[in-house]
Image (cartoon, rainbow, N blue to C red; front, side, top):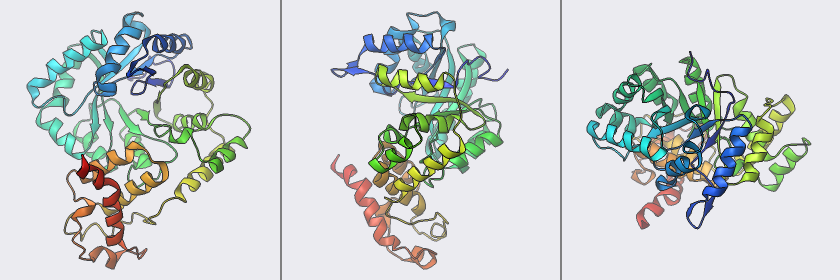
Length: 375
């Protein structure tokens, strides 16, 4: 039986964003939202220890797990880098998560935010093997990963650990062909390996819900639906998408999302064409015309992932979202930063777009590294 065999609906409550009041989770509002969510037939909740500095797990205990029988909901938690240093740390951390959430088992447990570096660290600590052992003990129903890196890294992880049962990726119409996120390529790796896909950031951290005037006008002309509804329906309409998560901070967002996901309808051709035009508006704000041919990467003496870093800056310029900063860190964990450029010019000699790469890398460094220096 597949891991999503008993999942009734393909829309989940992402608990990284919750209703807040005076710096704490508004548990009265969250409880009301939980009630409405469950009454509408949805029952998938997603959390992690780092969400809201631990408040998310505790809020789920107060507002969900202490108020409903265990079979009424599906709960996903994650093993997050930074909360363990050795293999011996993992089980105590896991038990603390069960206690924080008020449950005896997790339906899904994900190796969190996997990328090339974190994957090496998780392997060194036998994190995957520990999770599989916990599954055998009945404390986890299904083991999966959440992923933030290039598709070739995902290919490696799924090849080395075919026991993985689900993959959570960032997937939305803005990132679909983005060279720094590779949503389409990562999705295709999942499908090729037969893994159900869980979608995070379908609205790109709210960016695709708050469009510039021109983009909103394009979608308004369709005659119905909010910008967020089109973004979520885009993600949910692909084969193999088992779950689409959305962080909801108030009852209005919850009711709107339930309204169009209760009886889900994939986007039609006219709607997809409109989203393409909105994406083009965002792309028009990009300043770097890199086509990600990657000719520049092979000869770089500092091993800088130039197309990825250009993609990060383009995303920052177009969307102003925190994910761009995250992906910049991912792309520079084991490769050079933009400021490491020695200005040898080898990249510019092979660039078919004739981009002034050395000068552009200075702009990238200014965008992402100046903040680091002041912290």
